Amino acid sequence: MTIQPQEFPVVIQAYQPSGNDDLFVAEQVVYNQAEADTFTSRHTGLLIKARKPNASELHTTSNYAPVRPRKRGVGAGFVIVLLLIALIVTGFATGWIQRNLDISI
Image 1: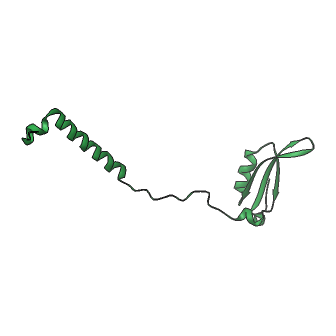
Image 2 (image 1 turned 90 degrees about the horizontal axis):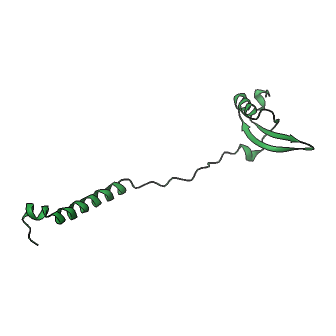
Image 3 (image 1 turned 120 degrees about the vertical axis):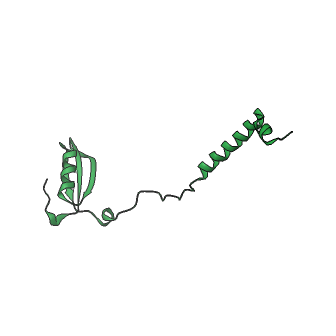
């Protein structure tokens, strides 16, 4: 399917012919001949129709949720505190802290 350069952008639709009517398969807004060729090769064997897009199809919207800034270092700090607590508990349990710091409990 060849589209004249002045006709872009174009909405290309693919339909599966079945009996009396055609079943809709896919649709894409294309902005150049390469995109149109990719769409038609992906939907080989289907009925391909082209039309001019309306204003809402040309309006681009962002499809992502805004990313909240993460507080970095909280996880690492938590792990370091847990390791220090584990070392202190192990040091008291084995008596190493009492021996080296001359602490009597």
